[in-house]
Length: 330
Image (cartoon, rainbow, N blue to C red; front, side, top):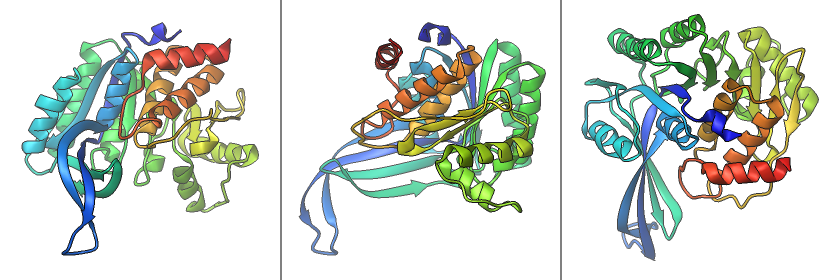
């Protein structure tokens, strides 16, 4: 069944970053302060943010076309010419900016436990020239390649501005491209007229509870359906998926396909980092391929749960996903 996802061309637009892991061991406490001393053993740089979505698309058999703005700095060079090339992800859709730092999230691990995280990032929005260059790169890819899906992956790092959002949605709709959105708080209600809108429970709670008609959102079917109706009235989108962490996910498709809660399956959770990236990847590709909603929800739960079993940000394993899906479908 997952063969239907092969060779799908998927544009991913959003904030990219390096997830950096400094790995070491701890045997003593510092004499200078009550903190552990980590003896550094190795450094592991991984694709994060929208780049992790691209990696998941590739792992599922698709062709990721990653578009973003990164810094003209050492980490930007490392991202494009080392980390992305190592995983076979093209950098043709990236714009290099002299006014921004490349986002790096550095996690220091001692004895396999996270001791500290250090974030290097700029949060200001793209200027007009950067936004124009990014939009041009995306439209060029839409015109040059048979793109089936565009994923707008927002982390509130400044790449997804109102102009970028509205113009790319309009261009994708003109070309009949399936539009999926993984939103964040700043421009949560700017993503109008898309195909799939996928917030998590906290994000939908924040949006609903700050609205004039605010109400409490819990994990009951009635409450989640009310939240989905609120979203549809505001955004005029086609499909809603709300991820519910350990409770699974809620999914609905309007009046003709009312919502259902799809529970998770038992997992040994090691790290939830990157699970949302995996879910938006499989959900958007499967929906664009015409999979039924129930199958999309099952695949999304399985894929998101699978990556939570590994420490750090990792892509989905397609062979395991296919085996688990077939076992559950019988």
